[in-house]
Image 1: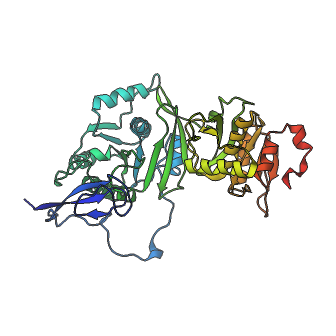
Image 2 (image 1 turned 90 degrees about the vertical axis):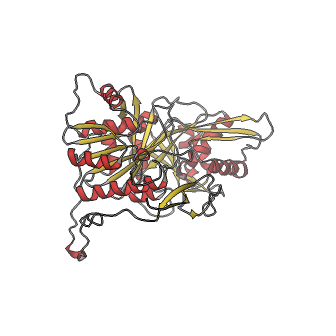
Image 3 (image 1 turned 180 degrees about the vertical axis):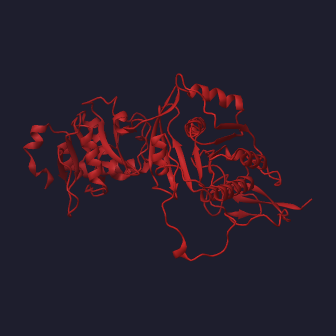
Length: 473
C-alpha cells in the first residue's frame, strides 16, 4: 500500500497549508481550507497509455495549423445556443452551476432529450435513480411526443465505470450530474474532495479532447455563490455557465461567465413552467408585462447582459425611519452602489434621505451590476419620495458621478433601439461631448448633463418638457 499524508488547500485561491486554518492567510476567506490526501507513490501507468490531451505531442509550425471555424452541433433550444455562442463545440467540456433546486438537472435533461433526436446522448446521474429521471422526462414531454431512442441513462459514481459506459455507447454528448459525486477508486479521498473533483475533471477533459465527445458537468454552488470545489476546476473546463434566479420567481437566467468558443457574459432567459424551463425570446417584454403605469416609485432602465439589451423595471420606496438609523435595502442592486446614489441625491440634489428608509427592487429577480442603471435607480427613489410618477413612455440611461454629473455608458444605440422597439417614445440620456454613432430615429432623445436636470425632465408632462429645450444645455 502506498504511503499517504494530508495537506490543506483553500477552495477559493488554492493556498496550500500543512495544517488547518480557519481563515486563509492569502485570500482572507473563512472555512475554505479542505483536507487533501496525497499519495507518495504515484500509481503505475501503462507504457502504452497516451500522454497529453490528444496523444500527439510533436511540435508543429503555427502556419501549418488549420484556422477553420470550430464546427458546432446545433442546439434546438435557441436561448441555450445563444449562451454557448451558436452551438456545442465537439470535444468541449462545459461546467453548469447553480443553486440547489434552481433547475440545473431539469434544463440538462431537456437539452439531452432535444439533442438525442439526432445524435447519441449519455446521461450519468450520481444523485438520482434512473426511475426518477424517467419520471421527469415523461413530465417534460409534450402531448403526443415520445421519448428519444438515442438517450441513455445510467446511475453511476465511479469514473472508471463511467468511462467504460462511454466507450460502449459512444455518445456525442456526455452529461455528468454532478461532478461532486464522481470519484476515482485509486484515490483515497472521498467523493467531492478537492483531489477527487480536480482529478475527475481532468480525466473528463482528456476524454473530451481525445475522443471528440462534448462533456457537460453539473456543479454545486456554495453559500457564497461560487461553484464548489477548487478554483482550478473553472480553469480546466472550456465554458462555465451559471443558472441564476430566485427559486420563488418564475424566471431563470443562464449566464456565461467563461467561454473559449464565444462571447462571455451572454444571457439566456427561461421561465419555469409545469413542463420544465421554457425559453423567453423577448425577455424585456416579459419583465415589463405586469408594470403599473404612472405609479410613483417606478422607472425603466436599459441594461446590457452580454450583447443583449434588457429593459427592466426598477422600483424605489422611501419610508420614514422608525427605529433610529435609516435602512438601505436593495434587491438586485449592489448595496454600496445604493449608498453612493443616496449620498449624491442628498448632497447634490437636496433630497433629504437621512431619516428615510430606502428600498430598491429590480422586478423579475434580475441582478443589475452595471452603472448604466444609476439614473433609473435615483429617479425611482425621488419619485417615491415626492409621490410623483415618472413619464410612462420614458426610459432612463446613465451613470452618475459623485459630483452629480451624468456619464454616457457604452452601446447606447443598441439600448435605444431596444427601447424604441418596445414602444417607448422618450429616452433621457447623458449629453454627448464627442462625436459618436448617430442616435436611432423614431425615439425622442433628451440629453442632460446632471442628475438635477434629468429629474426635472423625468417628472414633467410632455408639453412642459417640449417648452424647455434648454434642459440639454
